[in-house]
Structure formats: structure tokens, C-alpha cells
Image (cartoon, rainbow, N blue to C red; front, side, top):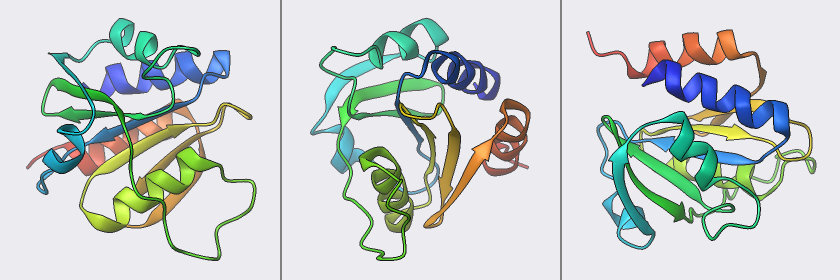
Length: 145
């Protein structure tokens, strides 16, 4: 799953397609899943990149991954209420920080404007990640001892 998420992020980055992928950990994301478009499929780069393709109904929302399944697409998260967020951060980045402030999820953000990859965990957004650094961070947060 980690390699698929990293390669999907790289694909979206190279094409400047925005993306928001949230991986559920211990805290349930059912409240968001229930209000989104049900997918319930295996995680694959083909499905993920299709869900974020511009012009589709799921392009602007988030995809939520639980274990090895894409549970839904087109999920909407509350924005962060922090005031010290750079103005350059758009809705995706603010939503990623917002969801990470409310639970223990890990959220990957791909910027449509810059192609930059970021990771939101615990209310903190780590920006400008390489695919290698993203992979390492996902391994840190998602690998169970």
C-alpha cells in the first residue's frame, strides 16, 4: 500500500493533478466515509489517479483508505482553524491539516498549483516532500510493530 500511495503521489505530482488521500489509523473516519461516494475497492494507482482526474465528481474531495481498501472518494473535511497557515496553502492543504487535528489519520496532499507533495499528521503539515521522503514517512506512521 505504501509503495502504491507513493507512486500515485508521484504520478499526480508530475501531471500537476491535485490529490488528497487520507489513511485511517486507529480513530474511525466513518463520519466522513458515510457522507462521501462509496468505493470499497482494493488500493491501486489506476483507481486513485482516476478518482482525482480533473472534471470528475471526486476530483476535489478526499479519498479515504482503511487498511488495504479505498473506502470512499469525494469526502469533505473541516478546514483547520489555525490562523498562522501560509496564504499559499489552498483548500486541500487546509482540509488535510484540519482532519489531522481531529484524529490520528495521515493525509497526503498533492498541490494542483505546484505539484508539491505534503503530509499532514497531528495538525502539522510537512511540505515539499520527495517521493522517497514520503515513502519513509508513510512507513514510520503506518507500519505496525
